[in-house]
Image (cartoon, rainbow over all chains, first blue to last red; front, side, top):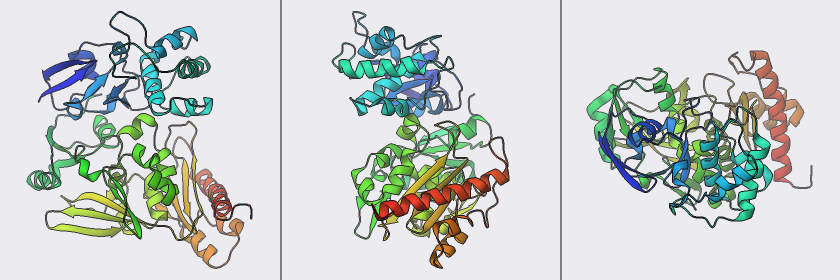
Length: 163
Length: 277
């Protein structure tokens, strides 16, 4: 089917198979490969993107279901001048990553978490990230990073879609 | 993994959805959030030829006070129930259970109607609507009919919905007894319940204790007969037929049911009469 998804502020139109998954639309059609395919079974969260502002697992959504919607991937967070989103800065400052595979999904889940709860407790951060697995088990620094980003507030550069 | 080939059709109204279901018959499945159906399709456990996407029927997404009951549109997402002030006030059991489904990403997509119509005995919401004595509204081309939650779940992934019928509303009576509890035993946060228990008053729903979500009838009868929590909970495995799988043996699930029902009844009673326990 012919469809359009706005990805990181840019409309991306394509004629794709009805069965195409959103994660493949993002990676193969839009050409944005930061969003990883991990478990492919709605478990690990590596494929997390924002769909109309909320975190979702793009391996379990048909591209067709996102037709006409707005998707933001981790590539869409930084400002046009390359200035990092506060969540990205916090992950860097707090060393919230080891191998980095879970990081794009972890960051997007964390952005969605702070949109819903701008001042979470540590416990709320941990439960809010329950849908994202880090196989390096680097959770402590990830939680620290999210708490630091919350502390820093949400004024941010970027596309204006993920505040 | 990519699902087998199918044809995607998007409905813009309930009538259009019902018309498409009539046109394609048994080859078609309704698609709501897709978080139960799409994983099955990836594994080829479900191979519909047509998917009728009802996910944009926003007029089926609501939580309303309807006097003696709360009316919930079938396409209301778990996230919306979890965060609804009305649900928190009137149906805290359901709000709590909705907040235990999957993880935040899943709750942003999954719907109560999709979860109930999928009828997975390991799901959280079916046990909650059983304990709450909810009524489910099924709409077909010939009109709507009500199905008691107790008559809805017929088997593994099998419900009382007729071919072509769409689950459109869940009507949950305002509970007469205030106490409630939801217990979910998992190894990891996002897992399905190895065993789960939903309690409202003296009504008890069980997760993962049979091929369907079920009521703990023996426990309820014991409570009605004046038994203590400990006595009633000791009967939690009666009438159940839990599966043995990688997570638990049958005997372990039976043990968990007894332990979790006791915890749930204790918590429910402490909520009903704060300070008394």
